[in-house]
Image (cartoon, rainbow, N blue to C red; front, side):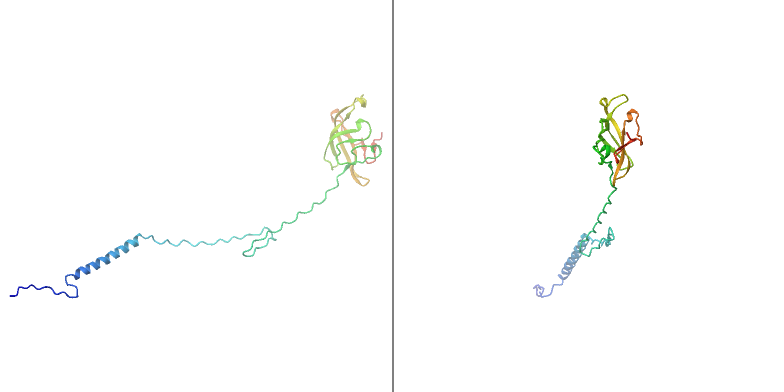
Length: 211
């Protein structure tokens, strides 16, 4: 009886007892790869859903006037030229206060517009100063000033300066000039009032009624 132990013959193929281990190892590697892919896929953020498409807004600019030109593409619009202001129509001529003529030829303020001083060339009662006019150019022009007041029984030398109201009236043409052809003044604080029948005719240079 031969007691020599038989040794397994080694060949190029895998031993039968080693094959199951290799298959198991490969299966484990595949399972690990699948698991890693699954983890990676779960951790990744999902791609954002596409938002709604914005609708472009078209703004239409209406020209301020028919003369406004429409700008060509890529060019700036040229503003329309503003209309020239209308030329003002000259107003009516402004009247003057009478004229220096006749008894008032040496007077002051006649032939002027809104004179601040009137003097008919006579005594101090014929002088009015510091006149402020109202409604000049109307049918009557009213002025407030200062003149010499001489009361009943007084002489001119004893008169005193007091407030006086001046009225220029009879607006019309005199020798081709628009003027107030009459003027008079009075002292309301002494009970006097305007009397259109008593005045100085500063067109003809006379008193009405005549003196």
